[in-house]
Image 1 (cartoon, rainbow, N blue to C red):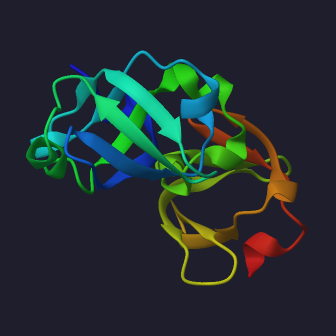
Image 2 (spheres, rainbow, N blue to C red):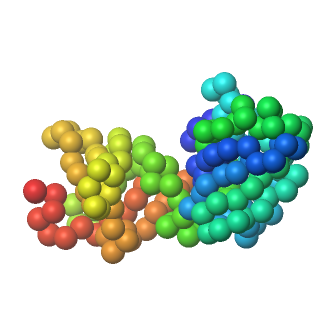
Length: 172
């Protein structure tokens, strides 16, 4: 059985393409083009299931076409519209951290190099120009800007993000 904490999202099925089961998808990662992935994971009907690609073709930096084994008609392809495409965590080392969907970090602990544990990411707020991690800790909710210059290290196995935050940011 595949568990949610063993996978990470890399894209989403958007529409059928043609009549033979090929599907369009969006992604912010080049991993499907750069690495030979033996399978992708989708979640039809709430179950995480591996599917084996017959072909994957990138059309632009953010869109591509995927043909899965045993998906051979337009009708079958339509059943996959809107599903998130996942890969096993073993492929995380192949990615640049900028290619990971922000929602992947929900559940990670945030540790500031000066203050220690700040809290766990419970949500991502993208309603402003700068995306924010929404953290829960003993004193309530904390918002931290998601910025490359603050990130010291990301430990995917332990689900920890190490940050070096500016003085006074946590007191705002």
